[in-house]
Image 1 (cartoon, rainbow, N blue to C red):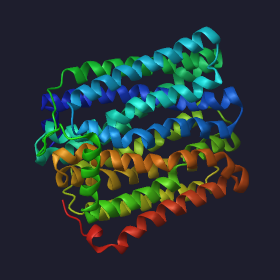
Image 2 (cartoon, rainbow, N blue to C red):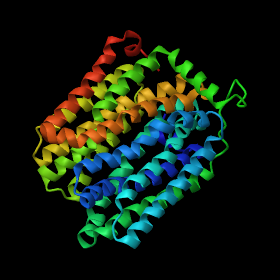
Image 3 (cartoon, rainbow, N blue to C red):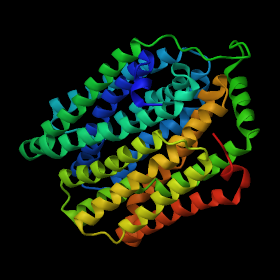
Length: 409
């Protein structure tokens, strides 16, 4: 099945285009924002605190967001999430314009609010894709989503390394305003494409008049009844725990090893997404029958490359291993995501996706807050070693479970 055939399906194409535009703005914003957090506060630890505020809503709201995605029109959920995200960023841009730099409280509050509304978008989007394409096109549809998540940030990060970095050398204020407002516009553009989607109501065997708490309990019972899902939850939680301090250590390495410029940070991210793009093109066209093995191998590969970053203080070498980490991600992600969409009934997809999102995000606040402490306590190199070893070990534990490693699409 070719990608062109999948993109001929208009509803999926509209969702894909909307997400491409939104992710373009996200990449402008995230690297620029985290860079400015460090510059405004002078604290690597503050980068971790801001990241914790950004991930906390996924822990607090994901379970309820999954219930909502399995009860209401998923199109409406995504539409309102995009609109509210755009409005939140307009507020941040206005604050920077008036005050010259973002107040400390806004560095914590705006990411928190953004994640509150995005926590509803993600399970709705994941649950919507199988309703927009036939089952035999799920693998290329998920690969296209993966390709978009890599090539679009490549474009925007190249722009960040060039044009936006010029803005920074000219005016840090306009550097941040440009990144924030570009992301705001991208959310509104995404909302326009989501508006064109058809109604995407979940297929439910039970009436939605049931109390949301009962819906939640039904969803958790469904997950507990599926052994492979429970194993995947455990593996992803261990992997997320190990990766959670990564961006804090990343920013510290950029500062101490490579001069601390936004251009270098953008180039590292650019190389990572380039690897994801190349691997997604390949994985999407494969007849991948063993998603469990794919997840184990891909996650192990990410862990090993992160570990090697500890010994890569040469710029070109650091860029190369960021590239290889990106290559490993689609092998873990795309086949497993496709298996989940095929194995989970439509009426449970929102709740299942939200549980995975909640557990992945649940460990992130602690890891992000401890990231600065970890760098101070053991140094940047040892922090990379510990994170990489933890990711690789979490992946290899999947080999212990015969049913998980024998999963078939």
